[in-house]
Length: 285
Image (cartoon, rainbow, N blue to C red):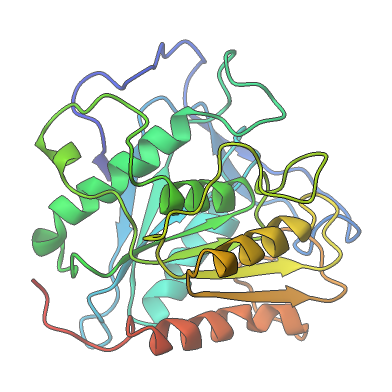
């Protein structure tokens, strides 16, 4: 486990209680695909990276920063963190789980994305790139995947790389925080609450990296319009993007496999990564 900030964490008072595990609420199939409780983390004041390397025989040199969801209140650590890292390892990718700050602080309104997680994600991308050689990663093969609120965080990172959201603290912050690709899955906060357009604060620079989006067509927690509108905005901006919407599919399906078509999204994503050149073995720099 690697702490991402040296010394004091920016904009952090630390008065939210101890970091702790809790179980997710048991929900029904109208709301989520994985209905049994899974482990979550909350009370995060010291953001960290937890690194899972693939077997050397499979290692492609590609790495992906993993942003679990949880509405910016909790982190679905098991379903959208550890299980995702295991899937990435199976296709030769280093999985790096970002434990970003949750829950929301009092100055982060409940109906908008929290601010501090984007500080953590930008810093994490630069830190991974700064340690790429040491960690056996190609510095131009570092992507980001996120689920639900973490999907928003992945897109905010992939489109907000031109300006840091915090004051630089050391030489790590001189290194690019632009991911080389992004994979937002059943994302929230991408759509404006009242209009069929991107949420305020999101814009698509021409240098936005390639994006793969996946969503459930029957998602009532984070409706699929979030991903549809993002796809259209990416297309208009000339950014390579691929979109998969799965019929009769709700929220929180993670990377688990079953008989339903949505569980094949990981295969489609792996095919996309291969087509983009991220699954070919390459000499690491």
